[in-house]
Length: 283
Image 1 (cartoon, rainbow, N blue to C red):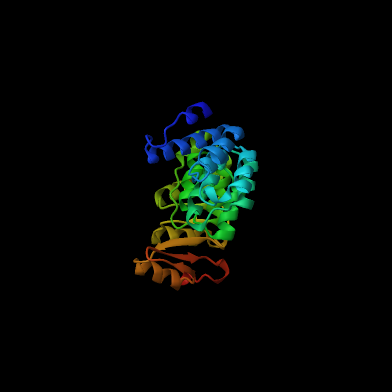
Image 2 (tube, rainbow, N blue to C red; image 1 turned 90 degrees about the horizontal axis):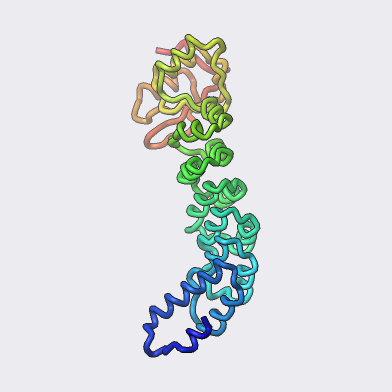
């Protein structure tokens, strides 16, 4: 490398190509953890050139010594606080992730991409940190977690992420044998299949059980009426999603004394408080 560089003619080489070659070479050296070569390139070959890829390459390949050297000696010549944590997350370099979190936390505009990478790699501590402290959305992170079979992370997102109408692919956990996650999905969501509910009610030996965090999504008025008629005492704390445009359904929810929890353009959420239901007012 030094031999070739010594025989270059700076006047003949295109400056843009030389800059590209420098960044490609420093990226390769950082990715290998070759600090000796990287030091020569950065301090002797082009000592004033900006490093576009070296930080991310070192992070993605877990080379802590390279990261620390770049941070301490050439901090102003590299990209810090961007998406360099993504590669470390994807490749499971825990120490690098924690070091970057302390020394070069991602900027606000980069946090969604970092969130997606953390969810896909199952770094639940990073997901919770970004969500709790920086209010980063987890909508795309859920799909990333599920497609990478990170069921613990997926469950946390569903429990804490306050997602409106999340899309769930039941085939993924079923194919992966994620029984506990499937049980969680079953216990916390019902869906719109009223005929399935009736069939299960008629053929199950035990009654339905509900948790206070159960969400009846995309519900119809007939299903809501039937559930409250048969399971009013067990639905305490459960929420019904009602189309905001369905004035008849929303009016009925108010009449039976469901509590309007929140309202969006597409849907309104009603919470059941079993002790105060007024089912005699049901139409």
